[in-house]
Image (tube, rainbow, N blue to C red):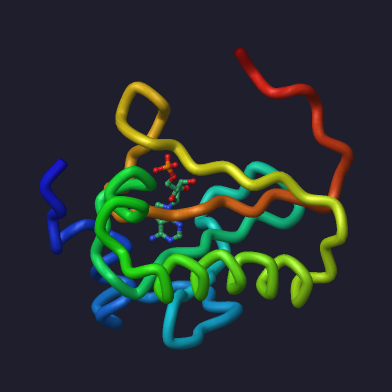
Length: 116
Ligand code: AMP
């Protein structure tokens, strides 16, 4: 999928629209989801423009990928979470609505089984 630089997360990265930021470094930005599905619901996005998980794995450098995933763990730990769920929806049929790769961190309550 072609990356659209006008997606909402690209605008957040450029500071064109606000977010409730909780962490940033050279690899990633983390902020609170605007419609939380759990007591803690954070989104972690890479600084580079990748439309989805598959594009991130195919196109991002090994350093970007390693830095991103390490940042996901840091963000969860800094949020005080030891137990949490990571989700990334890859493509529209999987439920992806914002086409800038992102990982959801969900926690703060016992989770039910995954939906089919
Ligand atoms: P997905 O459906 O996996 O693409 O997830 C997109 C997520 O982005 C949803 O959980 C939305 O609630 C969230 N979201 C959309 N716009 C914003 C925004 N401006 N700030 C924070 N979260 C957002």
